[in-house]
Length: 280
Image 1: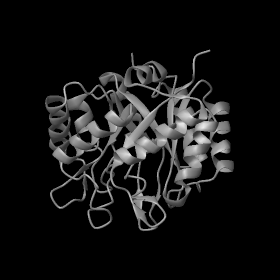
Image 2: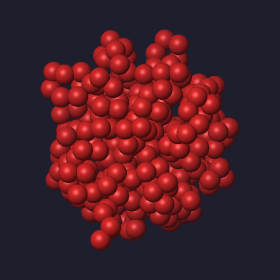
Image 3: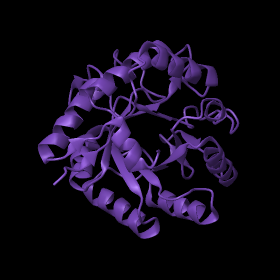
Image 4: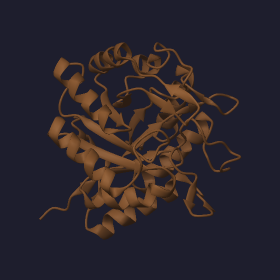
């Protein structure tokens, strides 16, 4: 009997952590490209990418995305990792700049944050109905698979609405974002509720999850045990364990690979992940 394949996504930088938080966080296009390659070698099938400006702040500058993608492909032609580009790397970006890189690069995957919320108790993360509609239709034009970021169960219901309206196409793929400030807390009980909500409203969907901070390990183990896929990396955690800074994103991938294999599953290759996610 074939073993279940589990996809590892590496979220290597995000929009927040800086070198002062962890000196190993990749910031420049060259650092990000090198880091993605190391994660691929360690077992990641998907790389979720944010960009930073020259001051290290999150940016949606399409030139940074292009430079990073071109560096990865030119320096590491053997790397067949799936690129999942964020559309939410700067709270001050316009709706147009948030998708400019998708139009230009036509990635295999990109993020679709399925609702608005307070962000880090200090700002607003706005994903208006018009933006989500335009974004979903654009992804269909560019043949880009939306990764539906769900920070609470209501966002799953939003996805069901956009599926009904034809903005999204089945089968859907969700990333359950657990333990983020202003989102659903990261616990196994809450993850079960998120999955049950998805199964009820969007049956046949695939899913992954990650836990921020102290919920990271619980979410990793729970996702594997529940048959889901996993996301790890310094976008979500700069600490490898309590009081210990992560040495690299590959270190997180290596741990996820060990957990998956010790549970009895196998880590999905990029091509196996393409089959699972319907990218082929």
